[in-house]
Image 1 (tube, rainbow over the protein chains, first blue to last red):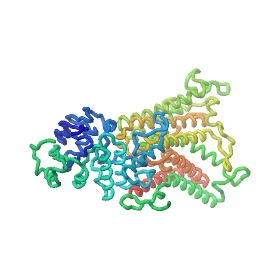
Image 2 (cartoon, rainbow over the protein chains, first blue to last red):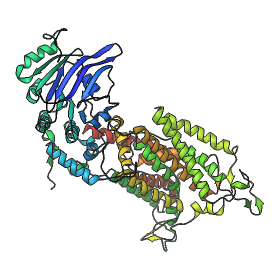
Image 3 (tube, chains in turn orange, green):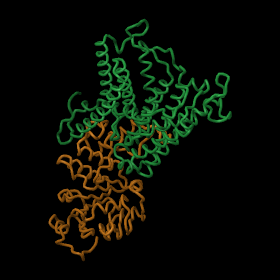
Length: 255
Length: 370
């Protein structure tokens, strides 16, 4: 097997008395695309929030790129190379596309503390480039994204992730609110990541999409990982059985 | 190239339709209001734009223009800071009181020892504080503004209380400090150099075609500061962060922007601009009173809002506020020119501010409906 990029050991998160995530053991290999599926409240998003350090875990270990990590926040996780598309869009509506792509990592003509001079041309050029490589079509990148459709905004968010992706990409239901054509575009971006060998964790409710895109499927149920199956050794009915608890009871083997 | 591009989902999308800067709307409103006042004046046999009595060398009514620009300049300087505060999604109610408190302190260090051969009757400090070089009161004034801005910023960023409450508190306290400073007595008789600051004429006598530059220093300072902050808000990281924070604070935080520190910086700059206004105001009037700057904060907010700065944060510009300030002063002097009673003026002014906000909300809703 190739190198392990992300591993969690006994990852646990309690919100007061609610055990949202219990003893999650998860492994992601270099270049691998893994889907995380499960019912609402199964712990998928909680799992992602611990890995990206949006929340601090109750206990357990996260090993990223060979090192145990304790990120203080999502920014540190990003600096370490984990790019995330969150369920709630982390976009600034009143800024144009280049400003959103480069939010928090602007390029400068010269540096002068907070009054550093922005290199708007280079940022715009690189944005057009990034949109081209991810095949995202935005009619006019200089408009504030407030004026754009939900799908276009999601594409901007995903293009940002794809453009800066270095070691790991996490997408939390990236196509939940999208139309057919927009969903196809997002799936194309994900295939592009696969071609570039960038590992990804995809959270999705859409089993068609999951079987289309990923190598392995991890099923969450009631805060626990109940199955981890290679795509070719399972099918939709099998996955649904795990999601609904028909298969993989409390004594199920962990991934 | 007028062909409509197709967006996602096959929706028609016309890029040209949305590219008009909102400032043009404000500019249009300005022209419209001027025309309305011109018509109203004509109906009374006068003119708003033109000097009907002795139009020998001036087509525009120079006197009126001078008064308008002076009126607008000092509050306009405050509005530049208030604009930035509103863009990050905040509000600053303290600016008027900060002007008052700063005015008292500044004047105390700008006094001259002898007035008409007698010792200064309004002296606050001893001889050591008399006839200081003009840079001393200016520096002390800026320090006052910085201090007030710092309190606003630290309260808002680190106690997380709403900006409305934090700056309301500073507003009340600063006015109290202004009254306490000299037990409510005015502070007067500055040095000649200090008096020159605002009454001097840095660029006087310059003529641009039909327009004769009024040559009042407050106007010069206002224009220079407006250009400076327009550039900062448009081309630097500072501006980008202001819009990002006002637009989506959570996203800004997640992108690694130090939102708290940036907020403090913005409120400090707003405080400094209030201090600049205080220096010019006291220099122009040659005296400082505890009641100076009352209601300036509301006028400044009104200028920004009329200029298209959204109270929801994230939208608006320095240019918009400058145009808003122009509209504001045109309305005030327009009312005077048609001899509308001062009481009505206040009432209508209030209606205009509400109207501008209603318009902003309406624009916002229209846009989100797509």
